[in-house]
Image 1 (cartoon, rainbow, N blue to C red):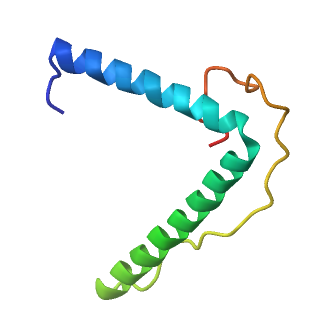
Image 2: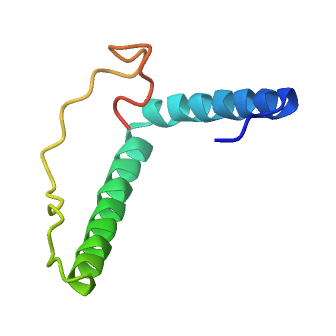
Amino acid sequence: MPRLTEREKRWQAEDDANILAQAEVIKKDEKRLNRAETAAERIAKEANDRANAMNKIAGKGGTSTPVRRTMRKKRPSPGRPANKHNVFKRI
C-alpha cells in the first residue's frame, strides 16, 4: 500500500470521523437501521449469487455458502452501544 502524505492522512481522518458520526446517526434511528440491515442482506445475497455463477464458470460448481435470513437480535434502547469502541458492531 502506498504511503500517504500528511494532507492525505488528514483528509482520511476527517472522512473517517464523518463516517463514524453518520453510523451513530443511523444506529439511533431504528427504522433506518432496519432498512440498512435489509439492504445488507440483499447485497450479500446478490454477491453470493454472483460468486456462485463465477464458480460455475470456473468449473468449481456453486460452492459459496448461501446467505440465510436470520432472526434479528433485540437491540438495546437507543444510546451508547454495549461496546462503545466498536461502533459498527450492530451495522
